[in-house]
Amino acid sequence: MKKLLLLFPLSFFISCSVYKNVSNITEKVERIKNSAEVISKSLQNASQEVYKVQIKLGMSKDEFLNVAAKKAKKDVIFTDSYVYKVNQYDLNGYKVDSMFYYFRSFDNKLFEINSGTKAGYINVKSNN
Picture 1 (cartoon, rainbow, N blue to C red):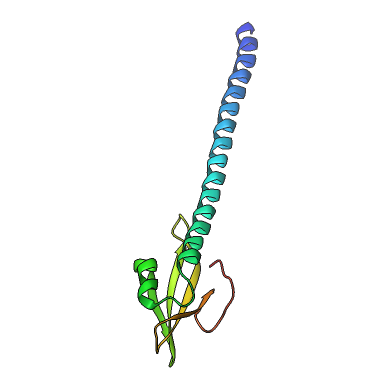
Picture 2: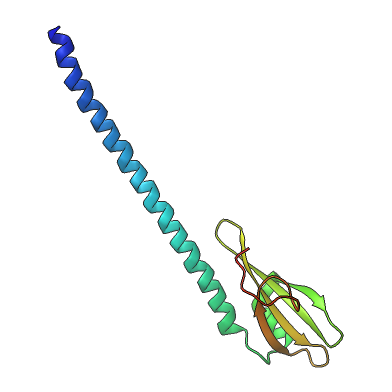
């Protein structure tokens, strides 16, 4: 009986200690997850800022392609203009936005920049 009475408080303290360790690990994992989300958003914003700083209205198609590198894909061709699309992704590889760059056909100059879902059809911000 004495052994049983000693065993109960001992098992209680051991279980409390295990719970505290698991709780600490869970808390640290949650902090890491939150930090990763903050870093992902910061990188996404930095990526968008790079394009905003380096890509300006009036630049030529060749200058644009030097900045956008291999990310730019020709998306739509209109009678008097054409559009390049650059998708932006988060750290997990999910597309978070698309930028559309409109060039005039006759002089290959950038005259409009939009973001959204489809070039020339919808001009709204999207997080798809």
